[in-house]
Length: 438
Ligand code: GLU
Ligand code: MG
Image: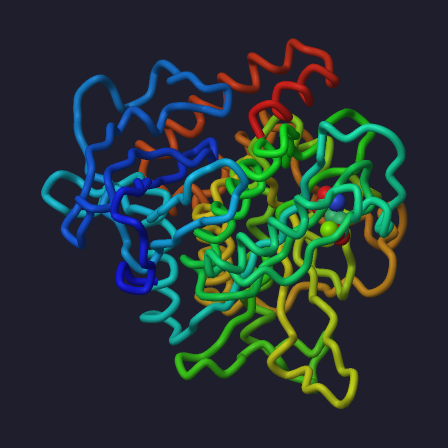
């Protein structure tokens, strides 16, 4: 939305936001009255070195010198109103630029912006995408029956408020549901262009936190809130369109109804899935979730409507003669809350483009239940822990080639530090640490 479309009381504040390696929303605020299209605020490169545990790690390329600007992208401006006891929040997402206005080499939002531009200029493609979020009401006690009306009602008035706040902020909420896990809920929003979709993902989380806190409750999106519990995923849905907005995914004559182009795109993602793990599932406890039989993913494969697939071909709704053509799309199921949404979607698009560039053939489409001990034993496994994931990432020159060397060095330093510090604790304590952060 443009500033004119977002009328606000000029005494309100506007938060100029970025989201970092730890996927935390950060930034600075100014008076809305002082904000215009030329506004930008200062930022520090070393802030990128703050990991999930909240401190700047040592041995990163960014030190005590250097300056950046948070340059707002006015199309991302939103006004979040209706959270009990809190003033309206004006928020705009910023690209990180050098002080001369050139893009900063390690800006996570520019990482997605560039991927979208590459898709357009190199392949004539656009993407529609949306992020689905699962989380747990960790302050809830007592029974939770999966998907039940009672669980839905227990979360009131939070659920109703959440849907209203999201709607009024322009985020187009679709579904709010009690999920399978204990006190677990899910919120989905409508698809839109990739930058907007990732911006929405960031806002959804912060709005959920805000509303729960306003009710003296606590929500956590941590991949697993305690060992053995159902995981919280961040599922990324996407389809591929031509520049006129017509779908390029659907071809009913081929397996899975996937066009040759969509098959190549999927092949790139499946091939680079294991190397992307360190960035899509970047917490020590992410690997408690990425295990077999969790309805998340332990192997990198393409599955027809299979919830254990890293990349799932979603079903279409053909009730009352609805047309499946525009509906057919993918769901990437490997991500969790630790992944920066701009980087997560940017990687999915870049891996897909690599498949197109090399004209890879459609990977095996797993149909029916997964048989890991039998006919699917040969599927590529995802790493089993964060340390292994970092090693696998470093061996994949395509994946590392997407990032600036300084970004990669910072990322690795943060994640090795985090792994070393949480690894010494019990699994229960590890889950507790991340449940507090996320
Ligand atoms: N909770 C599962 C996950 O960790 C997903 C369940 C579902 O398919 O919605 O990703
Ligand atoms: Mg779900």
